[in-house]
Amino acid sequence: MDREALTQSEPGRRVTRRRLLRTTGLGALGVVVGGLLAACGGGGGQAPASSPGASPTSAPAAVAPTTAPAAAAPTSAPAAAAATPAPAAAKKSGLKVALVATQKFGDKGPMDDMKDGFQRAQKDFGVEIKLVESSDAARYESDIRGLAQAGYNMVIATFLEVGEPLKKVAPEFPKTAFVNIFANPAPGVDNLRTVEYEFFKGTYLNGIVAGMLTKSNKLGYIGGANIPPLVADYNSYVDGIKSVNQQATAKMAFAKGFEDPAGGKEIALAMYDEGIDIIITDAAKTTLGIIEAAKAKGKFYIGDSADTSTIAPQNYITATLLYFGQSCYDQIKALVDGTFKGGHLKSGLQDNIVAVGSFDSFQKNGPKEYADKIPQVKQKIDQVKSDIIAGKIIVNFNTQAPTG
Figure 1: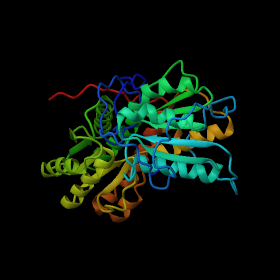
Figure 2 (figure 1 turned 60 degrees about the vertical axis):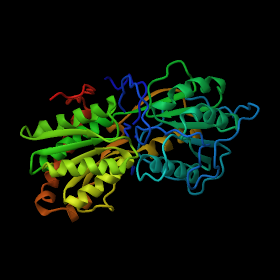
Figure 3 (figure 1 turned 120 degrees about the horizontal axis):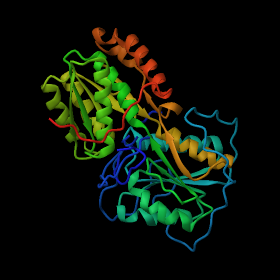
Figure 4 (figure 1 turned 90 degrees about the vertical axis):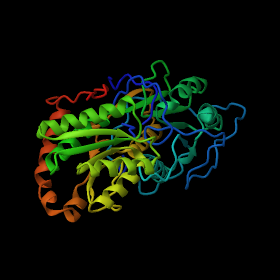
């Protein structure tokens, strides 16, 4: 599907999708997955818990509506990815920004990266921050509205599942800036910015990595949920493999969600037993189980959204990174600078929000017959990345499930 036509689904610097992530338009997804990256919060009617390090423990109760101070008239979309040098001493700006997270912190992936981005913005810009875990879909709208009523100048909410609540709440608070991270476009809502990530182009590049490094010519892909954006990631991965290795084959499988390490481990163990030597993950917290399988079998993986080399230095090759934290930081910077405006923003290889991670750990700790190939691999993906950005290579966003 054309990543510019997503609907509902889920995905996801350190981090990196769930897919979640991921620019990319995401076509009509009929399911809202409970879980991580692309995932959403599960059931339960509990009030959202605040993440560690955030002051509040739940979304503010609704109060008599008070509008937040108007953000300065926007002029342009915020500059992407490269981190802005921190001021020598940031004074309190008087601005308040909140994150409504539909997945749990502590994932060593997207959510932790967003938390880091907020904390960096707090330090650099002097903004007051609040991180809210909104685990019940029935509360998304009330949590978002409660923060706006409490005077937060910007409310950032995660993934496709909050798209409709944001479109409903944002017009009620025209002086508050709203951002939907990993989202479909929302035309006609002037104070809502939707951000889309072309994660599939990163999996194409890592398909090249896997295709050049595999010894068995058997490769795997494990996603957190069977939804169109992740199918597109897989198809791009296969296209990348085939561009350098016509003999290699790939197998796709999905766990029960983005917070299913046990399921991810079970699938990965079976794949490794079939002779697959490299698995690419697209599964957020579920990836932790895949890492355990790689260590147990002495095989390899390409992670998603985070550098997990410290967990498995001999097994981690690299990752498809999606810098959710930097993306959040950029939105907050636009608010502080007075350049925030609504509309749809695409982010990806061109602004380094999507990237292939470092190979340093694998070169130091991986088997020599693999590690010795890394310089050649890096040279290849650097050239292909440049060609993709220049439009010389077109990576298709194909959401059609493979047959056979």
